Image 1 (cartoon, rainbow, N blue to C red):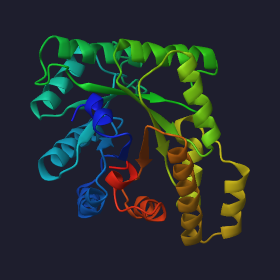
Image 2 (image 1 turned 180 degrees about the horizontal axis):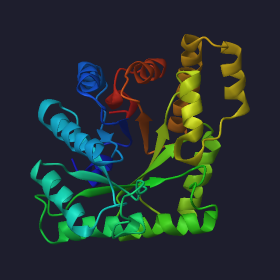
Image 3 (image 1 turned 180 degrees about the vertical axis):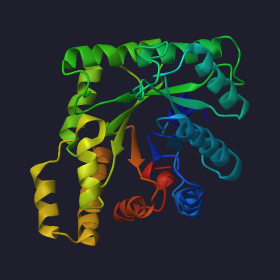
Image 4 (image 1 turned 120 degrees about the vertical axis):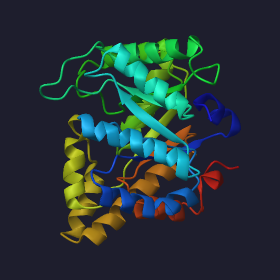
Length: 301
């Protein structure tokens, strides 16, 4: 299903993100849990694009395996850092041949010792993906659906919020169909971001990224993710009350994320994207706490 069709068939989307397992045993664990993810009936699932050659190969393998062996709709991330146009087109040819409909187009960061590549901004990657479709190289005459990233708390590499919005609008004008945001913990950041997009004339659907805190170590990792994440004082107080009890911290995190989702749904969010860390329990508990069994019920369909 193309990104554009998703918002015709339902008022909202609900999606998950996976990362490519780093080993065969880890891949086995992920697929052992896949039936639990399938039961939640997400609109689509995205797969991150790892740094380095072997990790990138695992991204392709995971995406293609999901397409072959599950009922899920996989959406691969594709970053342009470190690649030239020929290499990107090879990815697109392979994904089109595998029957994939959508791509998450990201700039990414070149790894140490890796060449800079042909692209400076993600908007250039979006434009290339669009051109691929216009040349009739995808089975769908519209080409790939294209998703891009948004940053409710601000892009870590662009302190100037006006410039940040100009660059986001450039990605949409280049052909992006949907925006999926980085994780956030204060919905006011998302609502402000959504309003600024509206003022800028950005009219594509905006999907909110949610990641529940599940442990102290996970919280610290989130603090480093994408240049930092803002933790509201109320969340930090609740985590502090849980002490070193990771089970209690996970309950706090699920409760906080559930309340975020409830509030987002009450304020007409167009989609929620769960950063799952390849584990289903927290996401399943959020669904249960919202009183639904799967994404179709959440979407009101």
